[in-house]
Image (tube, rainbow, N blue to C red; front, side, top):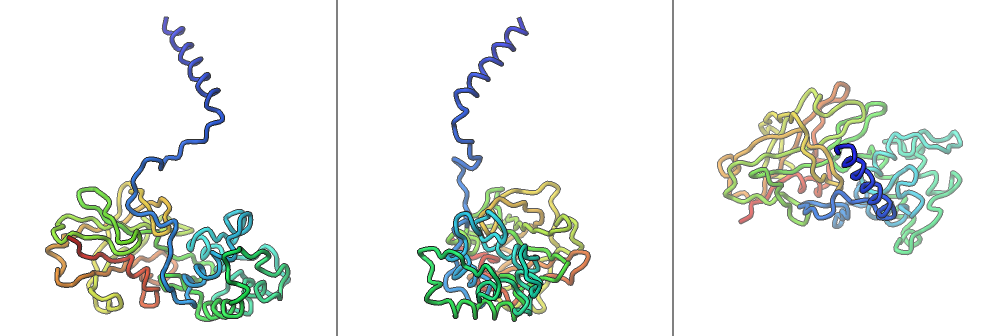
Length: 312
């Protein structure tokens, strides 16, 4: 009897698979409500000489063509993170021997991206310009922006400069919970909305490193300030490491593993008269100096993201 039942179940499953074979795969995020989704991340009026400005003004509208730099092959311009990580200190596939990397910090003359945009290396880029791109009208200005960014060390949006052969810790996301519920942000990627009655909040942080697990960083701390650029002398507090990561949306809108946290009591620990509180994290791997994320040279947008604002 048991064997017959199993056989019937098997036939039923096969029939279902046969009927559904042309159905699209189930999206695991269908029906879920996510408080933060920054896939369509837009930064208002970014510094044109920063990577945020270069990505938003140039790479995204001009170069992320379908079948080209849309993830089909590198460099990958699907989002700001993938663009930075596939440009800086990345060896080009095609090279005439005069260039070292796609982007070499402080050395625009040996950066392939400028060779291609200036037509000094074939094929010249962009090969195809998207209809919504203003590249033809602003080509000289945009090339100058990229050259200035590289000359300044090609910093990431947090203001940190990548070292050759020494991958550095990167921030993928920050968030908070109260009562284990993920707290919303202003405009998806602005400050965390912090009720002024909050007393049991956990701040979370997600990192990436090419060579090691973020939980194995040698130094993990955080500091708070009422000013975006006033962290000198700020007291640092230890970040704790989670036994099991928490998975939530990150800064670029994708699902990331949050491994670091700190528990805070906002209504007691922070002055309610200060409308907004900023925080920075300090992490260190085995090779690099201590990383401050973001530092004073980071774009304001990431500083605003790394903050909370009182709400009713």
